Image (cartoon, rainbow, N blue to C red; front, side):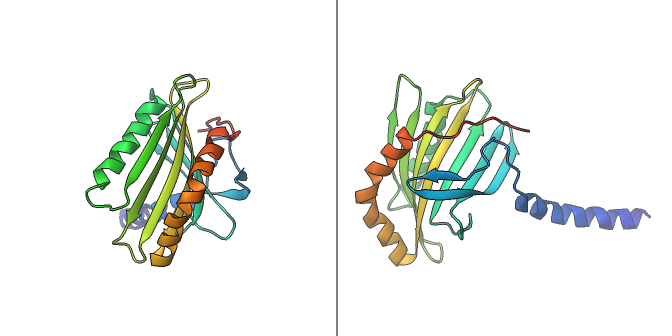
Length: 194
């Protein structure tokens, strides 16, 4: 009996992480779809790793979170954290990559009145096959009615030499308008459901 229980427990422990990753649990009161810059994004992945941190990823129909070209993210942190502190944490990660990532760069802006922070940054993984270039725009907002931060973000990727060059070439014409669109967007409110 104990041997059978041990085998069952080992099967559950092996399969539980895979099952947990495949289940999408909407915890932020933002089931989607989210429309941004004319693109519709559907909820495709969610996670609540703990410590009052919640993350949901949305992609257009036909795309996956592993190989997306566009993704919208909504995240929330309920611990005492200010938008500028959250943004500075991401800035630190980008700065650490500068020695090994030839495109790593960022720009950060803070609205002193609202407490919001907008960070846009560029990263690459030239060791991946195919290579990946990723541009992100993060809007950090104080969490209404409680401590913490809500993040609304857009991420765009280019894969392989052609895709990476195309994304880098597009940035000159889309960067300012996309940042401004995210700054001015009426974004969905977040209400955390545990």
